[in-house]
Amino acid sequence: MSYDVWLEKDGHAVTEDHNYTYNIFPMLKLADCEMSKLNGQTGEVAGPWIRSAILVMTVAWEQFEKLNSPNGWGDRRGCMRWLEEIARDCETHPKAILRVG
View (cartoon, rainbow, N blue to C red):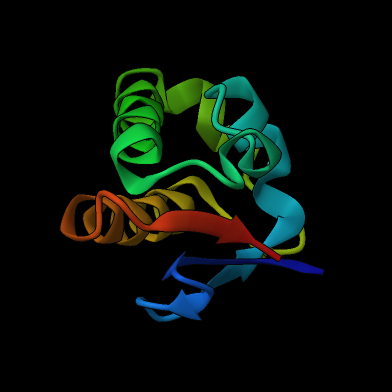
C-alpha cells in the first residue's frame, strides 16, 4: 500500500502524484502530519503543517530513524524528501486542494 498525494484546482490535478509507501505512517503520526488530516486542506494550510513535520523529523531524527521500515520500504530520509516535494507544491499552489488517495 502507498500514499498518493497531489493538489487539484477545480477538480483537475495541478501537480504530479507524489507516491510513497504507507510504511511511513508511524513517522507521520509522530510528527503530527497524518495525511488524513491534510486531505482537503488548501496548499496554504497544508504547506506549513508539512514544513513543521519536516522540522520535527530533522530535530528529533533519532526517534524517527527507529521507525524506519524493517523491510527497507520507507525510511526517515525518503519520507522527508517526499514531504519536501509536497510542501513545495503547496507553496507553488496555495489555493489548490491537497488530495490523498
